[in-house]
Image 1 (cartoon, rainbow, N blue to C red):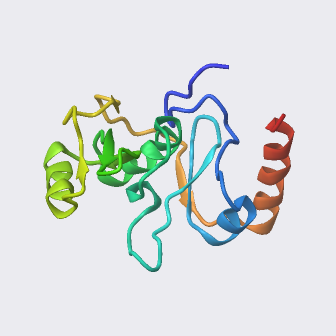
Image 2 (cartoon, rainbow, N blue to C red):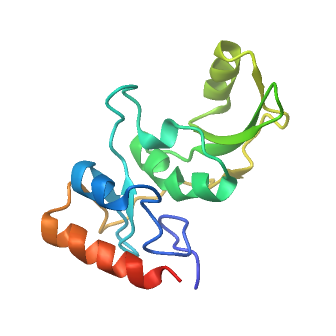
Length: 152
């Protein structure tokens, strides 16, 4: 299976990773115009930030949300490896190196050794069939059925 040029994923039903039905029913979705993958683009109500602003446990998971950052900001964003004082790695998406520096200044227990993205698409591109919307019940059920077929 090849990587989708729009949403950077090999698997068109891999997301949502956690609480799929709840996310699809209650959160606004970025729907990839190329492969149809749904990616949560909704804001977290408590923190008032979008899902792509959260730290991710792996580079692979961060890549699954990168397209929503690129789309939101209308420019290529980068994934950076951040390490806390205990040596625990996480992966965060930032719009620019300046945003990373601001984050590190506020979070003095964290560092970014490379100070450059470990993954980035260098050109932003719009795609014709992309949709941003809340799914209806039928769309949620169809997507979940397709997602369950892809899980081995």
